[in-house]
Length: 183
Image: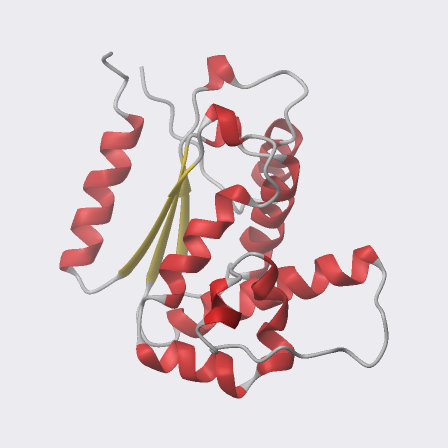
């Protein structure tokens, strides 16, 4: 099957920025995985954790900040990067979600302090709503950091009620996203 080149274009961008010393974290969503919460971000966070030893040390040093990442990356507990931390009070689902989003933002901004970061999210048309919500949060909260998020999407396969549609409309209005259409 010959595509229109969206993934290839993102791959070339990734190669080019790697030559310039950037860190690259890549994630691809498959149609069968569209119902897995945060599926889009699991690989990004995993690759982010692999960028350097000092990131893992910083995560270990600040367990309360990074503890929510254990929900996406259980190996952080297995490898003893994160200790099992019990919070003194139980949090609402909304508070838990915000802690996860903030931990994700903190990790990505931490990496970008030492090297610019390119995040490629391939095939966004298959992303679940939680992944799209986190994308919105991170796009707005990492705007001043040396972080670029590139997403690819087959618009003809993007359902009319997909959460990415209103998200892109909002982000365009806020001038934090640029769209490139490939013919």
